[in-house]
Length: 145
Image 1: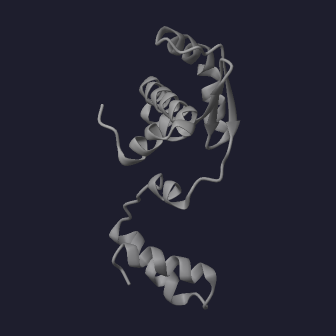
Image 2: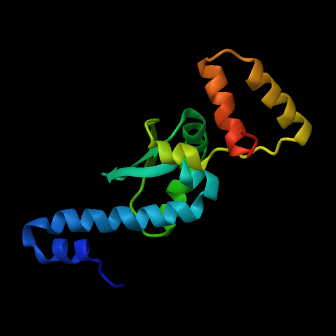
């Protein structure tokens, strides 16, 4: 395995060896967990820590946390089979994810020509307001304004 620059720095410093070992352990567990979970669920979860056999996962929302809690025993068993000392899995919700992650999950909508014409008519009738501004933004994305 080729070491990146940060890994080389950490591994060269004797007093940073515990940090380097913990980082390697968390990376390895993260890779295994992301392979175990579905792609969508893996995007919504990350490894918080592993200490004394207790794995802590961080969920982006309560729905993800519920799914992870249900999968906890199976995940614990899977990690034990991979030679990691995991006796239990706990889950915390930490919803403050970066805006870019929120934007990645946004769905695209295809509006008919008729719907776009009607929305443009509505836009033209509206008084200046935040709703009109939001409608203008949407119409620009669809190439109508």
